[in-house]
Image (cartoon, rainbow, N blue to C red; front, side, top):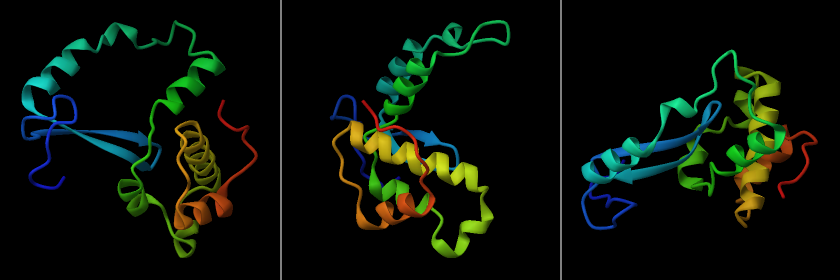
Length: 133
């Protein structure tokens, strides 16, 4: 959260709040907000949209759409969250595979090229998830 960030919504006022796009153990992006824009954005969110235990969860298509909406990825925010090869034993392999595949699909959906270090993480941990559409 560098000082001097300007609100991503209005582009005019200094940021006072930051929201994060989080996927499991990693942060994909942070968005700076000024006070009025943050209040307007959070007021627009409807907590009634959240599924309860009695309601069906999202369809696979809805889940993929929500996943892809986490992008575009800010590589400078993501990098510190990714474990290096020496720390691979600290997180469950399934979680790392999920993150690797999701990062690949989100980046592809947003037309982003994986930087070399992120591509190495994806190659190390990625599974066989279908590409984003």
